[in-house]
Amino acid sequence: MKQIERYIFMKVMILSVGTLVTTTVIALTTQVLIRVNLLSSTGQSLLTFLELAGLLVPSMVVIVMPFALMIGASQTLSTMNSDSELAVIEASGGSRVLTARPILLLAIIMALVTLVTSVIVEPWTNRQIRDLLNSASADLFSVAVQSGTFHEVENGLHVQVGEKLPGGKLGGIFLSDRRDKAIDTIYYAKYGAFVESDGKDILLMSDGELHRQSKSDGDVSIIRFATYALDLSLIGGGSATGGSYYAKERPTGFLLNPDPNDDVYKSSPAQFTEEINKRFSEWLFPLLFGLISVYFLGKAHSNRHEQVWSVVTAAAIAFTLRGFNFYTVDQSGTSHVFTILCYAVPVGGIVLFSVLLVTNWSFRAPKLLVEQTATLFSGQGSLPTAVGHWISGSHRKDVS
Image (cartoon, helix red, strand yellow):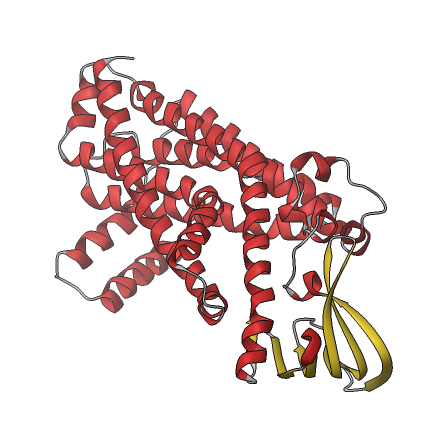
C-alpha cells in the first residue's frame, strides 16, 4: 500500500470508527430505555443493565456500520477535495483507483465483520438477551405479589397478583395480553402456583376464566376452566428453551435446516426465511456504500456546490437502497421475488458502481441546479426565488 493510500485508509478508518462508536452508543441508549421499566421494576442491578447494553452492541453495529463507513469516507474525500489534495493526485497522474483502493479495503474488512456478526455473534447475543429479559419477567411476578398492583411486563402485557397464600400459592391472578394484532386475551384465576415441567416454568391457574376478544368485529368468547397451564416463556417470563426461541435467536445452521416439528417454525415459517435473507444480505452493504462514496466523491470537484450535490446524491441513493432492503427482507418470507431482490439490489448496485469506477464515468450535478444552489447559499436570493428561477428557466427552454 502506497503512502497516500495509507494516509486515506487511516483517515477514513478513524472517522468511520468514531462515527460507529458514537452512533452505536446513541442507539444503545434508546434500546436500553425501552426495557428500563422491566429491569428497574424487578430490582435488577447495574451489572444487568450493562450486560444488556453489551449484548445489544452486535445488532446495532450491523445496522450502523455501512452508514459509519459512508460518513467517514465522505468526510475524508470532501476534506481532501477542499484542500485540493484530490486535484493534486489527479494532476500528478494518479487514477481514481488510488483513492478507491484504501476505502474499498476498509469496506471489505467491515463486510467480513458484518457477515461474522450476523451469522454467528448476533443470534447468540439475541438468545442471551431473551434469557435475561425472561429472567427479569419471571421476577416481576414476585414484585406483583408484594405490591398487589399492575405491572407492565412489556408493551401490551400487564399482570397483577392479589396476594400470596400459604404453601407458595397465589391468589387473585389477572393477566392482560394485548400484543396480538388480531385478538385481546385476558386470564383471570382465583388461585395459581408456579410449577416446572420439561424444563419450562409453568403458571398453573385454577378456577378461572379466559376471555378472548376479536379486534376486527369485537366478538368475545369466554372459557371457564378448572385448571389452566400457561407457559411463562410465551408471555415473556420463565426460562426459555430452544423450542420457544424466535427465528432471530436461532443459530444459522438451524435456520438453514429447521426441524419440521419445531413449534415456532410450524407457526411462523416465514420468519425463518426472512431471518436467513437478513443475515446473508447485510454484509453486502458496507461494500455498496463504500463504492457509492468513492464514485460520487472520489474525483476532484472545482465547484464547492457541486461537491455538496454529490454528497446529497450519494446519501439519497444509499438510504433508498438500504430502506428498500429492509422492505424486501420483511416481504421475502412470503414471496420468492422479494427473496431474489434481497440480494439482487445490493449485488446489482455493487456491479453498477464498480463498472462506473472502472470506466471512469463521472457524475456531474446539473449546471442549473448548481448555479441556483450557489445563489441561494450566497444570500442573494431566497429559496422560493431560487425555485421560481429554476421553474421559469425550465419553462423558457420548453417554449423555445
